[in-house]
Image (cartoon, rainbow, N blue to C red; front, side):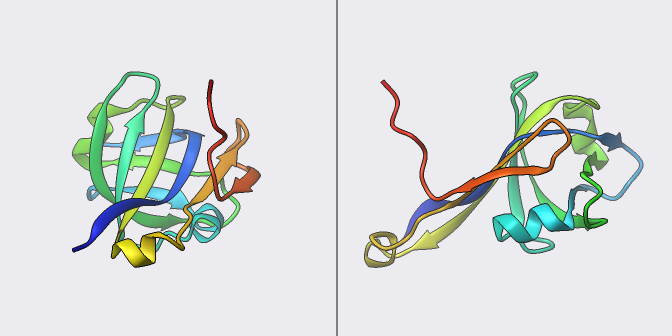
Length: 125
């Protein structure tokens, strides 16, 4: 048996552009992808904090250090420049592997520059 766990997330990135006429995907600053451990063409989930939209697509590289988060193709109808999003990827692990796994959580500033990287979410309440 395998279970699906959060592999990584880019928390509260800002959409820098949308391109309806571009081949579908989400272009992400290569430095952010590396920090999170995302691979090009990896399946990702986009959760739009601004408007509540949720969708699945794949990651492609944008120029390193550019801060680009570009939502492309049909997904561009679900986001606008300036929207705040969470980008997440998941991994399938056995329960034994999961016991020793922690996700990579990347927190950014308003310009999509890394502010902090963590392996756990603070306990609430």
